Length: 504
Image (tube, rainbow, N blue to C red; front, side, top):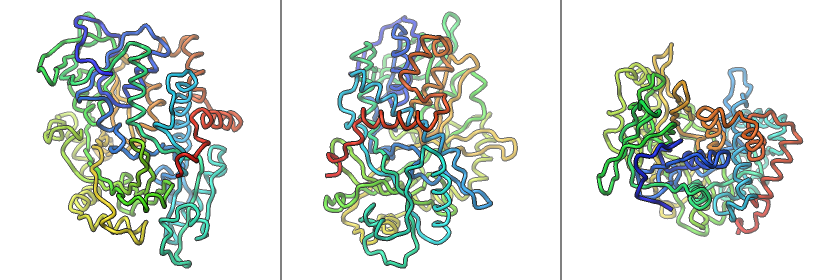
């Protein structure tokens, strides 16, 4: 799937930096709507999808706001704001439409390799949290995208939904849960590999690995000159591109800072490492078939939202709990300990200082997480699984994330959760910064990048018609009937209705 030689002195229409789910999605979208465009994909590591897209490095949930409580914050008056949930839910359905299109067109033959049906739950304890969850349920249920959500405070019902969590629970314990059957479990590493295989096999666009991008400079004849180095031979090359997309995960910020565009100014990054508790006892793994998200502590950041997840990785059913956050100065799992220091520039110092000052609780939280022992983590797990035994679980390092820091008129700088596309005024260079929900909404994000970089294609009659076939819900306000029809179509095509093969 990979090549180590690159055609020199060739003008590329698009160079994608990074071999993850974002570059794979963008490159394939471009090729589907304009097959004659010349695309080059560069990856620093040995293979595609080894950083943030890798299955063990991300949460693996099809983030569609069915269970993630941080997407539905509580207002001061006791109401719940569900606007972000509605947006993310539709974005994930756009992703499913793209993948379903690839199956229908025979580009992908086995969707279960990367997507499976696993019900999504929210579960909380305590009187105040139960009241919040009920209000959230009542608000979401009024929207047709969430009308199939269920709510219960009944212990027996929760025993049906997630029996492992309900072991040793007493009848008078105050708790509540919601459930949506159509939730999904994702292996974005496997999906990334499939997308790159399509690009090579059907569009003669292989990914070039062991190629590190050192710099991106303006060019007089074309838009950009891209300097790269082969990490094996140390050979350097200079390539020309009309458009460049920087989709290198945590490494995007450091590369964007080298690009001579004013739009990059003020951006900084806050690196956060992660870890999972992974179950190694098959009997316990088989007691849980669900994704169960709970609520972060009052002073904890959104990234700390605990969840107990059924996963499918490399053909095997797994059970993970976490995430446990930590701190590392690296911007990538395979990065440098100097990354954070290198990212500090004159134009982002006010942003960095402002974000640090206004996020002291986050710093305290990360210090506590870094110093946690295995038993400390097990104690957190026992809030979910009361009889969890330390010998049944082990710690596994997850991926590295870089949260966005940007200028703020009032605070100097603020930490921003989520993703953001930074681009030049003419759209010839784009960069994706940030993290969650990231991969789950990759198709919507990359469609936006496509429109920024190639508006003449997206807005042409041919482009509009083709994109409508590929992703009918993109940039639309669907009716209940349209949403339901598309949901059922994607579930059928992606084989999400047949759960018998994954429950066993």
